[in-house]
Length: 300
Image 1 (cartoon, rainbow, N blue to C red):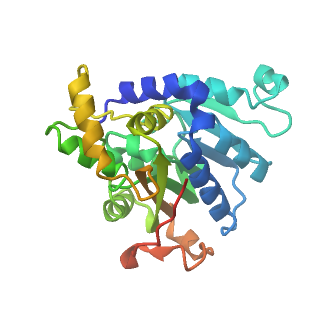
Image 2: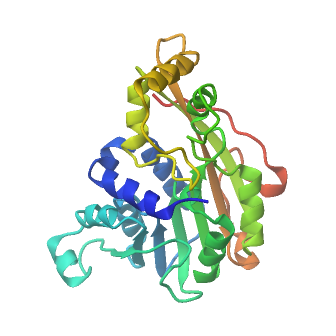
């Protein structure tokens, strides 16, 4: 189970530096936004679920200028940062000028939206922080109108694999979040009532000089372990040195310490009638029944 209050606090604390630090999230955001071009969409209502500081929301507002755009996030400080992308007139009057959007603080598992009211749900790197994936996907499905598109990215199980392995060498306590794999996500989407989910995977490798830089890069985007049974308490010097020594075994030939991020992309419709719309390029998307693994990508 995920401690949602811990998630909200962590991302709230990271809100002022999040956009500058979230380099991978920018890559995944641009990937998802690019995939939207493959679908024939004219949405009336769009939600950016897990909107963070609103970078995706602003892009969606530009892409769909006639739609009502709503940024939804669990962490209110993130939405405060998102509001800085609005003009003073938008903030004062609720959004009537330029490319406005509304902001709503809410949990993805309890959306304050009418059933069947949303035509497009966009979610970048949010699902991994939901404590009940089935309940969250069922709630997303509830608010989807017929033919609505749900497009998302989330982290897969090899994410932070080096850090997980290093911690495992010093104790048996959970220090790294468990991430759902692609097959389980596809099955969960089907259980929630989405039609013929399409999924694929990318892997990205960040490189850092030392363990402190690794840990700082994770903290700066609020991505610490939020599991209820996570290890708590002080991390002493001796254990830190042990963790440093354990992580050293992963140092690359170029002298850097790697951090692996596995990113799962998913798209599906709330109604089978919409599944005939054109999908993304064949080399990057496969039907759930024929899932494979994409080539790795490096990210410096």
